Image (cartoon, rainbow, N blue to C red; front, side, top):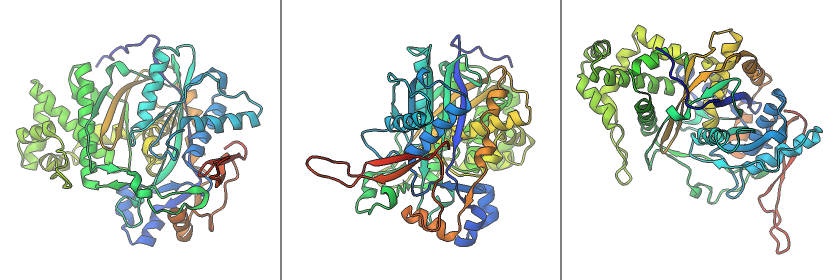
Length: 498
């Protein structure tokens, strides 16, 4: 299949990536011993471990440490940066956001004898569940394509995923940040917004974080409040699948052509990743739906392949197509809708046993996947972290990716999704090797049951070593007087390069 030309000339995209993870690690095999869960099932469905922030870290320090790492690793002149966007759903200030990250980065740069970020740098924050980072990325690309063509942009995604003890989400926690350098004529990855697809639909009971959850909480160390979501797991999974299919529909409406040929021709795809199995199921469903579309357009090969899976599952192609077209129902009052995909889930079970599944799903999603099993769900940072891990992995294995097509698929609960075509830039390897993903994973501090409990339940530092590098929370203001107020405002310290 001949590559489709990208719309912008010169193209815009990513010229560098840096990942910051807090050092505190929970090994899921040990977690299973503490909680009585099945380690084999947890490993297969979720992964190997997740990361947690220390008591002196918050989402702004995670983000700022990632930006500092990006500036150092790629020798960026901060004065050229005209746009610093922040994607997160863990923001703890309803007025300021990205400008806090800017302030922390500036303080560290000055401490290192470097110039601060440009004074005319824009500092927007983007929020939509786990999709906020992708919206920030799109904002940065549009900035470069319009009024910032001679500048650079930095986009950072950071989050802290917390779930209640004993909940189904507990093993899918995580924390971390990914910063990306954006430029025209990018050195790593070109991104084509002109051919991208979007989808959104309000899902009231999918996954929410109403402020009422904070009512009555007593702040823990350094002002920490538990940020436990309100969610309905099976419904959320159906919403993820539905939004993925709709975003791909919108993308293919712009591209045209056979959908299965495009999906099979990708060098790799990278998706939002709450846990290991979820993107695999959605991507497999997307391929089956693509077969259905192409079969309806008269493609005999697609019809024969899909009909074979349907026959083995004991369902009809028409019933499967109806489910894909109908998608997920909304919530009526306070009740959840029925399972959206009973028929096509049966087809999916058959497809998983096929050779095509190994190529189209496992082969397409494998790049960087093993490393991703090490640190859990990063919400907005999960997709860019997988992209960073994949490009680092491909460079380490000397994979031939120059000019190859990739697909970037973002998702945010509630729900919304983005499908963005990407192409690997010529000479990308040196830029990818500078990501140094495995160095990021090194030096983890494994928590015991007591340390995990202390950090989870109160963000206390009992039995947990304090941070010795990077930007940290020093203290929280307590004054609420007529002449001076700083109640709840964080003060920070810089301890040296993270």
